[in-house]
Length: 439
Ligand SMILES: Cc1ncc(COP(=O)(O)O)c(C=O)c1O
Image (cartoon, rainbow, N blue to C red; front, side, top):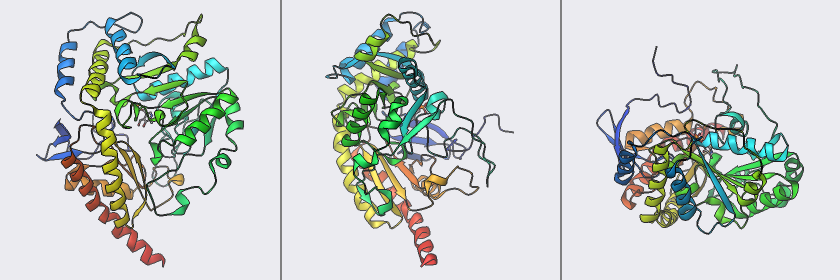
């Protein structure tokens, strides 16, 4: 029996193992270096010298729990407001925590406490985490948190709260099948949203999951409905915040501003587990005179606070937001070109340095991750690894995603895109064979 439990989806069970990394590359136990093309937790790639230096210095710091005041925590909060949230005058205070899942769970339970409502809302195909209320609003069918058995018999744990699901925004730069985009105007698509949000403590919206990205009109419409119906709006920027979107936050693409923002993943520069929830000034004002009755031993730990400060300064000093914004154009035009050449590609959408390539194939709505064979996206991803790049799959049957480090060079980007291009030939062959059989 293996000592380390392997759990199924994307559990890292493949050989070769990762034995090191530098810049945009992983080093593998078979002696190869491969491009790290899908790693939302590693915004600076591997071994960034300034991150390493900050963490070496932090190794001498005391252990201070969230129950104590710690100067490095105040500094990290100041850095977040002065670098990440500059110009965002609505933002009030930040609280640090351990993971994106936990940040979302905490934000949702705070919303329940503030509104006195139990239900929560999200959009179709969302992923917000694996614990508590964050798992409840994770509505991609295969991320249910239960036990998937091959060919049925899957057990899904009950939810803690009732969940309402809104339709997603569905913009794309490339679309091969009309059924992947709604033909209805936004107002009609959101016709049920007022009734759903009138019962909900909060609506939480993220900007990458399931291949659905930021859409300004959608954001502003959902924000206005939430405000009118008394629900809070939580912007889940766990993937997109502070770099990957090519602006500090994806929500800055719209005119509305959230009540709560959650952050995680890259917030610690890819070197520590740290996350955060940012509350608006209005929400902070509602907390006045009340005591928020919870606490965490390792939240806001000094080591993680040093990492947050170092990461924010690197983003600023290396001009990474502008760099990602430039790369967005390059990825958009190359991916459109690649998609047009490959009949297996159904849809391409993205933002900054996060892109989804969705293949034709079985409907994601029915997939519970209970099929014994590897899905087509996983097989394309294995081919990409043979060719020298890690291309992720989000655990879906048909979706591949690119999320390279923000420090990736033009040449490395070109190499990653060429490997994707070549790997897609495997999907084309299967797609064409299926088409020939059905026609
Ligand atoms: C949009 C979004 N929110 C929250 C999470 C949960 O973050 P974590 O896995 O760090 O708990 C994820 C993870 O993939 C995510 O993509």
